Length: 118
Image (cartoon, rainbow, N blue to C red):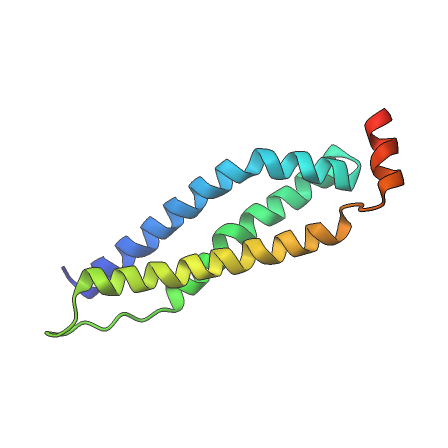
């Protein structure tokens, strides 16, 4: 397998993986964003922004990795390392998003009680 094919195959695999994860998280994130933003339109914007970030940042990490091929290097391990960097980018992005959202979630018990009575 040529280095270019291995590189592109791994980037494609990473993109497919992260689009799938974003599709899974989307419903839960939409519910939370509607509650925090107050309107569906605002929540839709931030959901789209989050989805783009959760796909593009890991791909940037994957594209930045330069695999080394040679007689002592195995293509599958180089592809696994590239995927590892992409996963690190995803975890960093998801963690950052979670910290930002956590900051805006009301922790006051009075707000929680009034929200449940609506």
